[in-house]
Image 1 (cartoon, rainbow, N blue to C red):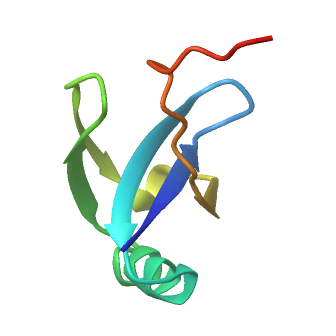
Image 2: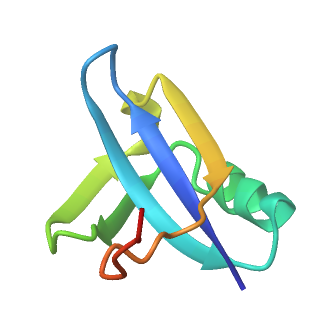
Length: 76
């Protein structure tokens, strides 16, 4: 499974991010397309519940996300 970051932009300043685990970019795109014109719900990484209607979104971006382990210290 790969992790993808989906960003829903409402305008130039307001957006919501969602992370999903799915097999491929193509499957992520299919998921977003299947959610068109309907309510979706999810809880973000901060534990905040979101419910939004996708018709209110102006732009949706999907990108593969490579999580970085911030607990590891780097030596310079």
